[in-house]
Length: 553
Figure 1: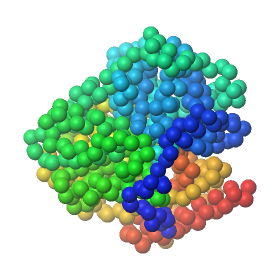
Figure 2 (figure 1 turned 90 degrees about the vertical axis):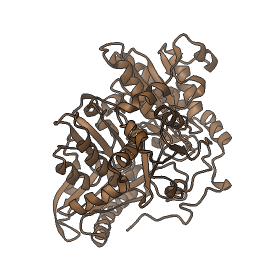
Figure 3 (figure 1 turned 180 degrees about the vertical axis):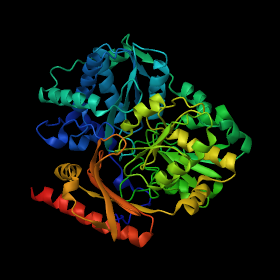
Figure 4 (figure 1 turned 45 degrees about the vertical axis):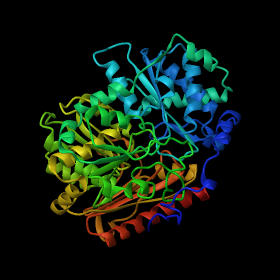
């Protein structure tokens, strides 16, 4: 069983496939969500609220309600410092930014926005929050990032980062979600709002340079002197995202031989090649979406890309093309813990339950503890903040890690830093990350892995998320004795939001997507491709049964 691949995957987007931006923005303002319809309510997934204005799942009413709820939540939690507000390049991000600022100004929140409507990567917002709060015990800052990450062009997204700089945990977002839905049910009567022009002129609205402090600080987390001295050739594709103006500044600041292959920003993302399902998706971990940079791989010693809000990375090498995310995560763990002598010996490696077990093997080989959590970077924020985690990564190509001296860098995903680390690795070892991964695989065992995706309704996603170990009545997985069936993470005991079945040489996990109407099956085998396919067949049977039961129900 594999994910059905569209015949259009990897091909350039055609005019008929491009989103009509004017219609999208009109729907944002015109359509009113019905809070009686589950899909149209505010729902914080693994990273904020996401949806499309065409479906009445991301509209002005949602943003007004969420922002007012955040203002109340800040008051209730005693957060009264400035709020850093950033946006990505999706078409819905600009109108959502306007809506948010109208509410924040009416609630007299000091808001820090980039000058001249500049786009702001997620890691630059996290960096700004942490930099402001350093040494403070009161008047702490927090932030909002208007982004649906790598999602298709007709999507919008809205996520909140509390004073620790990372994605907000459920203890913060659950009350915000409940308050926002109550505001929707009350037809927004209790939402405070100013006209946009007045909000821009408000004494509480301030411009802030996100770019310069972030770029100037990068030398404290990646050895860019070594990169400059090596003379290696690098390429970067911003994929039309929020970091498009950061890369030239990085190259200039550190004297790097870095070619930005495209600085085009277009909310239709017409320059993308189509993803696995024939849709436009700015996913730097997808070989279908990354065809432009893969086609240029022989021009560079190492190349990289980031998604729309620059919190995910993709690494391209001449020999291997696009590295699978798990391969590069494992390579980063091995390299960093062998080349960061100032890091605390007690700092652990964070990974999600659906990331490769090869990372477990690498973690043991560098003598570190493993901290395994459910999907969602929010589970890492506190550990990155207090230094108990020096590295945290997830299978969807998101990661962050400590500064060279062991101090916190960002507590949200940062696509820029892992991208630049690939250049440091190449510069200092004389070999690119793909070559180093193959060395690790020869030493620790080659893993075959795959991820299957398919459509799922809201009810089906809910059913899959609540599967319990007692319902999984198998004793063998692809011929091996099942050693564990889990619905909670071993690192923190938090619910997986799905199920994971483990045997000695293979495993699978099944869970609904937290950001799209999809289910996902992750599987891995250390006994080769045939064994992997057998695991996936069993996993698909279990998922089909669960989804079928939900459809009948």
